[in-house]
Amino acid sequence: MNPKGQRSRRLYFDILPCFSRKQHRESFEVFLDLLLDGSGRPLPERATVKSPSSICRFFNHAAWNTRQLCRVMRQHALQHALQALQDMWAQQPSQRPRLELLVDLTSLEKTGKFSELADWVHTYHGVHGVHLVVLYLCCGALRLPWAFQVWRGKGTPSPAQLALKLLRTVPAVLLAGTRRPRLHADGGFESAEFIHGVLGRGLDIVVGVRCTRKLEDGRQMRDLMVRGSRVKPLGLDHTMCVSRPVAVPEQGARATLRDVEPRPGR
Image (cartoon, rainbow, N blue to C red; front, top):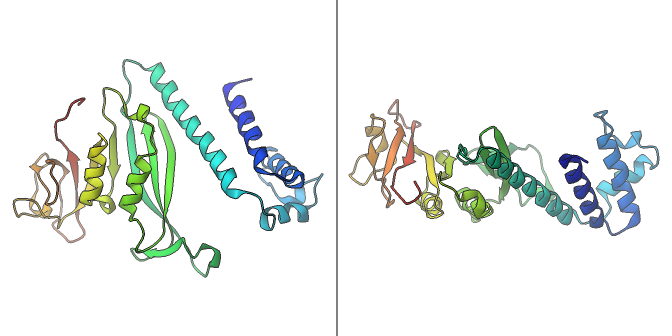
């Protein structure tokens, strides 16, 4: 059996114990067969050994452990991503690509009322919906979604704090090596807390900042027009490099800062 088939078989047999009742387990098996038949139409009415109403009740009314199922699938996905990275590095021991970590806030706009999602649906920057902080791992040709957190509204951990929480889920073995991993984030993650947190984990950082961001010498980012300028933003202990200067000194313009603090393992 090929490695992909082995992983699928392990996932299948790890999922089945999530259903304590035989009836639920059988309904899941039928629906999984519909997903895998290759037709692209996994509809309940196409089932032959279970009635469509039985499968609909399984999803909409049956009390099975959704959290346990998500936990098993996430664990397998992380194991697969970790193995894919390690296999690629083993094939290129002398030219190991740098690991790039991407943090992004993705908003899923919603209209209408969703009582069951009341804890998830909020308005952020004028967008009403579900807001996800997502962490991606990129290395060479690999693009792997790693983990996400749901922003739960004002008074809860900010997107930047959720991003730092996601970083703690990355195994130390992935962050080791002669080439330091580098994190990329847009201007929504420019807080001093976030930058200090990333640098404290031994990562390089490239982050967007507002053109009105103040510097230690009293200037603003809008005053910098030369790429490569070394500056110290107010509130930061690290010297940063202007990787992309502000092109037009407008309120909405942004610059990109890159960490240049020399540290061991550079």
